[in-house]
Image (cartoon, rainbow, N blue to C red; front, side):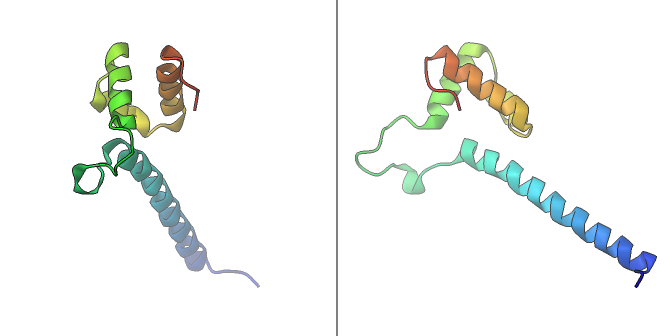
Length: 96
């Protein structure tokens, strides 16, 4: 049984659309991680006052990288991991 070219084209377009949605979702994860603010603007009692984002911003400023530049790098997973590794190794933190 053979598929018609129109069915194959429709199937390919559907798969491409799904893949694009996955990539958009992955990009959104990095944005959420970089822009997250606790509900009500405050953390629960007993939690550290310094959030990952604040520590990361300090590390970036020491390396001469802007916050906007870090957001651009976040869309490329290989470059992002390299940037995180640089930040953690400069401060003696564990690598990601």
